[in-house]
Amino acid sequence: DETFLPFLYYCKTKNDDYRWNALCHIMNGEKRGELARTSVLKYLYRRERRGDAVSVDVFPFVSWTKTPETSRFSFLWRLFSYEVADGDSRLHALFLPLSDIF
Image 1 (cartoon, rainbow, N blue to C red):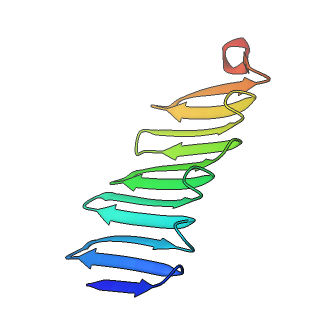
Image 2: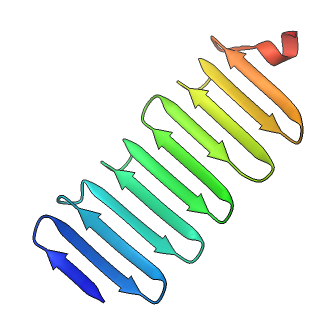
């Protein structure tokens, strides 16, 4: 199935999979099997879900990743980052590994 409005919206579906874009490709998304992606201006905002794993990026500042085993948030890479993996946590502030100090 296909839906098309010139310059505004396009969507193509096949079974449970789909691909769409809007506003001249400024916003787009797709779903193929367990993979689902949404983005605005390609990498300005990007969200990807693959099964239970979710990743969100807001360029260039924020990154957040969540899987069943780990969770990670960062602002400007390691200017501030916090990660929890298998019960252990790691903290970085101003690029210094504070979890190693405390």
